[in-house]
Image 1: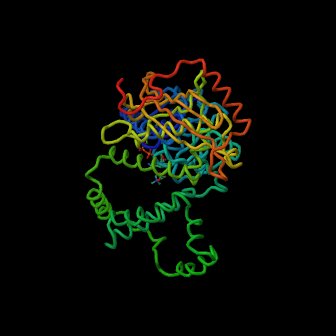
Image 2 (image 1 turned 120 degrees about the horizontal axis):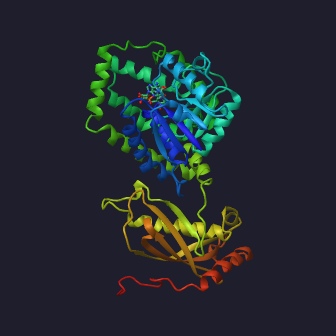
Length: 472
Ligand SMILES: NC(=O)C1=CN([C@@H]2O[C@H](COP(=O)(O)OP(=O)(O)OC[C@H]3O[C@@H](n4cnc5c(N)ncnc54)[C@H](O)[C@@H]3O)[C@@H](O)[C@H]2O)C=CC1
Ligand SMILES: C[N+](C)(C)CC(=O)CC(=O)[O-]
């Protein structure tokens, strides 16, 4: 699949990275001579963060090319994304040109933050709004507005890129999310202008409270809980009247004069000027990955999108030893020594045991039926370092699958087949109602014995049954 990116600034670069890391070929057109450098920086950011959301290896990256002519970039593209500056006349010219150059069945998306499709297409273009959020390579939301057939097609494609398409019921200036953001932005400008709060105090008010809350439940579900056991009706009765009081100046826009711009920019420098934009981006991305991975555990919000996306990744071809983990080492696994921390060797091995259990039929239904395996002993040999972003593959050999026993040997390998660790582990089958060991159900025992007999002819792995401190 091919995507064409027309306009490769902050947002176009983010789109390029999102497509590229999901296996699409990406062709960029941007007349700025510095565009290639800027996009490569955004792609580098994406490479250090996006794969960390997943416990499986993402598809192989596509190729990234830069073109001096828009026609070359757009030719043969399945999706053309316009991300040029937010000026209607400029958008008209560029979207009309794209509409002439693009294949008839290509999706033409505009990243516009505020214009409606009827405005964008006023001069004969055929674009839909596909409004993303910064950083596009990490945040899933894309607001889709326009022709029902094209937005439905676009939504299917976006889901395959790990994004969350939200199709608007009707067009409106600034779609949904930017209307909400603008309300907060406008009120914040007033608070600074009137000397009520600094930029830093406003940011604290957001990130210490409702910013965290909104990421997992949004506005309405959060307020439902705030109504206590009586729920939303009680909440509305208690806080509805406050809307009549002059709490906010919502419709009143402060004049954007030099004084206000200087005040805000000065306070922002004082707040964050000690860090470069790249450092701030890295901090933002690491925090977003951490929060999104937490949401993944409960399937809430953006976390559910990641899990649904991950199951579509190509499965590693199994050789005699099944591949039980295939992923990249995330930034968050690296410690003060600049390599993967010892705890995560166990985490990777535990994930491998879980995957192997699934392979022999110990899946969610089996556990629900009251059976599982418990780990009773583990021995790890740390043999080599692993660094952030390095591919990590685990293969698993069955040493013994008789009766209640599941005796496994995991090989953890980094780039170029480097053996980074071996993990020998013994699990026992357990009846979850008695919490005591028990024999597995016949269907599991049978699948396990297939692996065990296949692996029985293999040599015992080097390091098997080693004890701590043994002379090599
Ligand atoms: N920055 C943000 O937070 C967000 C911006 N957007 C929207 O994305 C669009 C782009 O915004 P940014 O990336 O922030 O702007 P930007 O200023 O970072 O990038 C715009 C790029 O377009 C290029 N460009 C200008 N004229 C062009 C032309 N005729 N053909 C091809 N490229 C051209 C420029 O060289 C520049 O690299 C806007 O419509 C904006 O509303 C959407 C979501 C968030
Ligand atoms: C400020 N903005 C209107 C360009 C913001 C957006 O459109 C979305 C975002 O990423 O905040």
